[in-house]
Image 1 (cartoon, rainbow, N blue to C red):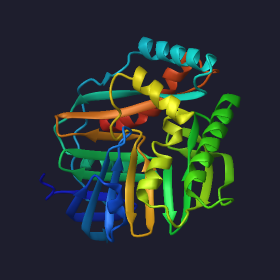
Image 2: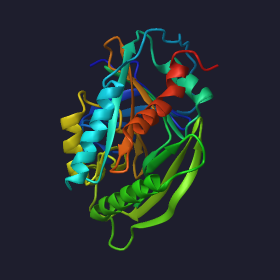
Image 3: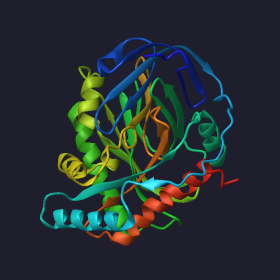
Length: 328
């Protein structure tokens, strides 16, 4: 594996000179700066960098993509799958499932130029870029998966997406459901009585849309390390569903392709500090001449199949336009 050109950027921290790659999350307890990816399917990729400076991501050219994007699910298939999930909910198997589709097209250029474009045209609080041998990610993630400061941890799940600052009962119920799931997940690894929800059902404005968000906080137990954190919290509740185990089973049955880094986790760990985003609004490439982008929607019993498809299109439209050079 050749990682001579490996690079990671997030929050104006630019990391280079990769000295170690590990697939074992226990490595994150070792001193140093680690760039971290965890795929939706559970694969850890931990890259330790020797050089970290405060700097912007270096500019690179980006030629807008002109080839058509192919969706892993057609509109009719996606809407049929929404109906199938609603049947599962009616049968009492699950309460909510995040149903996703993957858009893919040809691409033979570095995603670093795209990542720079995303920063200027779709600024996101947890934007990042990663380049390793066989994997490249340009992220405009708006969602915090986990912030860790010593023993204090916080997650900010997003549930609810709209063109205007107005959310209905379905969005609010969905958000509260995921907050309850995250509270339970935190309870597995946190000190008893430390888990709290200081912010519930608040609106955040992002380029082209609004999100409904909440905060969940807690204090880690002294015996909890990164393997235990991953086992308790991954994948994120906001991009899987509830109950989580049943939702993941349904996703594996229904979705035709693996999500990979999409709906996983991307960020960094450094000693007792960490900042990890949910891998949404990301483009990725696996050195196969292709670029992919994922989009999805949370399905509940109140879901309208056509509206859920339109939500996936809303989430994708602005970023696909940037990648295609159509958003100036």
